Length: 84
Image (tube, rainbow, N blue to C red):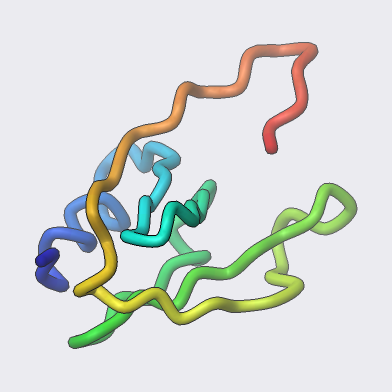
């Protein structure tokens, strides 16, 4: 099981690096900005953005820490490609 401090290592990294949260059910959540993940004692609130407005969440999802199986760093977007 992931602990809150395990996730905050990713959200507070300097410089910040985008990451992906993997759940037990196979769902994934990408975090492209540290403000889009709020870590609590039992879950992480992940903000989802769309391409039109990448600075404001269009919805949020509560991801239980007990269902996080891994967190991986995302490759940085290269110029001319779209970040998803």
